[in-house]
Length: 339
Image (cartoon, rainbow, N blue to C red):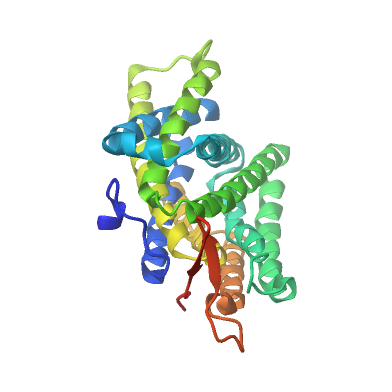
């Protein structure tokens, strides 16, 4: 796949089909991270995050090595600072909160809260030019809020205050990744000379460096005793998450972020919730509960309504003779948005 090779040219912003396909597959990979805390339940979230991102940094460094000299010349200090910030909020902080939420509140509850990401990102994207008004977004927001109330009511009723901690951690993960998604999309728009996959791998390298610092408090003085088989399973899990969820998933997400407007990119995140819920039900060997089923349906309905509300964003404003334009690198570039 040419767009996914190291050093490949940036993906065309007009290729909506590629963006949607990349967003769906990225969601399928990302859904797997909700199972990891269950597969390694005897390892705390801090160790899971450190292990995953140390492996991510190592794999990313190997893959980006052929393009390293070129990329060093293409990025300045401002871009490296942005990579450090994005790596922290979008990877390390997000996954620590997510893992804690899964271990204290369960896979389903965490997946449903993270399912609000599409609307959170879309709300930020709604401030862009040609975006729909807040009034047009109210039906989708109401559906999402109702879905969250359903799952929160069940979680708190069944597990009490321990689940409230999980719910708060899931909410923190929601805020953390919303900030990442919006900032990352804007940086990709500015850096047209850096491919989506190169930017993802650079994020991985910086995340790996930050994970070295994280590994000190995560593993130093660990009083838990693990058998050799536990450590092998932990290493295999960390490597699998690094390859599939981080390298492939993040790379595909960057392709979607560059190929779609921000508001439509936000809609793609719902597939993470769908796949995470599916994996969770398969893992637990059960069907959705009477409240989980409607909650998932409400979240999906909210995203569909939100996508319909944004249909006007991908075409020129009525009465306009010219398509939208945007600025990049000091030049005014004509941008015809796909329907």
